[in-house]
Length: 88
Image (cartoon, rainbow, N blue to C red; front, side):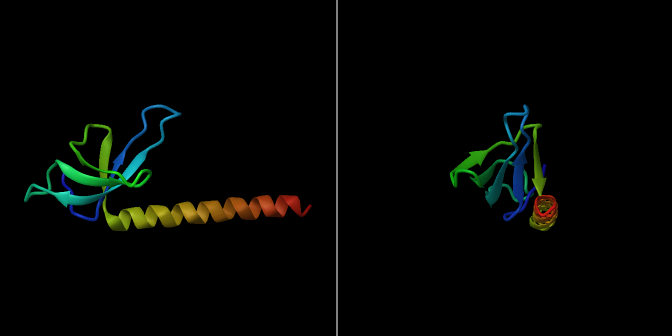
């Protein structure tokens, strides 16, 4: 696993009631981008040093922005469909 400052660390939820956790990588201590990483978790704004396990992936800032845009588009489409159904 390799990362750059500004990438996102995503820890995959292992059960239905445990969602994915996402954090911004703010520091890397290895010159080749290997762990550990200092991560600021999005949900709590807590910063921690993390040694990611097999349930983690690194997502570039661009990939995360693209994923966020797709999610906004899906959300807007669902809102539009709900509004359309209510007007019937």
